[in-house]
Picture 1 (spheres, protein in one colour):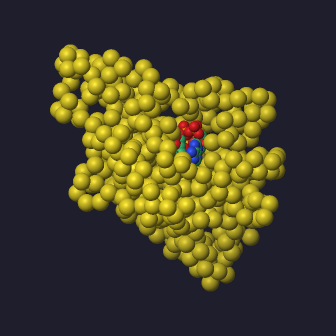
Picture 2 (spheres, rainbow, N blue to C red):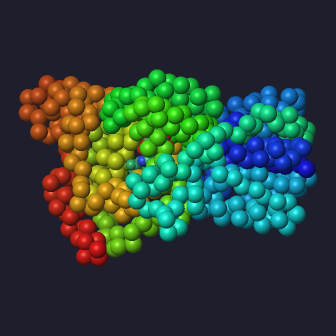
Picture 3 (cartoon, helix red, strand yellow):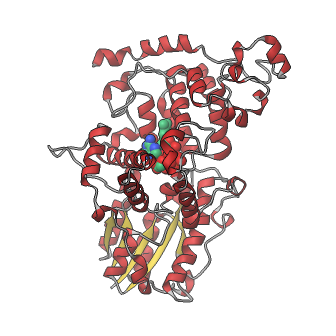
Length: 484
Ligand code: FAD
């Protein structure tokens, strides 16, 4: 039999579920990636994610070529609507089955159903596998067989279930001789950005390592400091986390490898590894929430929260714009937004701070913030992003209680005590002493003058008073309390 592996958010050759199953079921296996015009159409022409994918495909193509041992071996890359292109390619290659990994986002499921139907019409099977998460869908359920919506019991059940069976890697390399040579018309290099209608982004300047090799490099580096993850992970000025999120997003590293390593280290008593494993479990948790409750992509997990009246109109638009542009007058919030806008990454602590600020200080609908993050984040993943936003707005499963409202100044004092992060992203404030950096409007006029700062000109005055905003938020959320 002949198989076709369709790569999507799993851009690596090793420890790859669909590729392994194709190679062990078929004599000959072709590999394809489709630059899906349905996904690419709305994106800006310079997009770091598209460039990240393109660079990672160059490596994947070379890796498949090498593993296949053929001069014509490698990845077929198309630029078309995947929903039509995959069945057409399957037909043209005369394959018996298409193999691909699960993608549980609502639109991806819809696309995959359409592809499955079309393939079936042509007598071609479609086999799909878990690969993007360690445990998924119905693998972790409560005793009564329902999905968990609270993290801690989910995590405990996850940890009880996990064993070598779920953590082992798929030995693709053993069967790689079955990788087929590409038909002549497809034996071409990965298209350039220009060929798919895109321009170079800032990815190169950011020196963000791409592909499986880039992911491995980041992971090796992180393993040197994983022991200190627990103490360092909340301080954005410190190199604490792994920075692997973009690689997990595009599957350039296997989540099983990460979980296996963290689990083994945690069992040896490495405290940082246990905490980090927890984060990987949060990732699985939000994927299963999205799978079981797809309405979260549009509405609150908890329906009562849909009754909240958010700010509307020109004032809300202006406040939102100030937040996006890092012009709120709260240095930690503005520095965090500068990090996002310049690099496409934002530290987890800061994602919580800026999300809370938008929703609970500015009174703006969390979906506006969710969308802005989706446009900007290199690691944007619907499940985690939606989970994070619904956590911050209190509308999600196991979310922050609505009456808990981050104070942007005390968060700043606590998590950027020396103001190092703020100085890095807001150089215009660098001349301030650390006490004033967290709340420049409280600085003495002389200090501002000496630091060359004129509030309202070199740096904005606060666009909202936190104490007043806090009271408005409690009122706004009263509808929720009434419903509870
Ligand atoms: P590390 O601390 O090294 O964590 C390791 C991995 O665990 C991460 O790469 C990520 O895959 C996973 N992880 C960590 N924290 C979480 C979490 N809270 N939920 C789910 N997975 C987690 N993460 C995304 O991958 N994509 C998003 O679009 C996204 N949007 C977010 C929006 C908000 C409002 C919030 C509060 C969090 C969001 N997160 C998102 C979660 C988290 O902030 C990032 O995963 C993390 O900052 C990525 O950095 P890292 O790889 O260095 O993380």
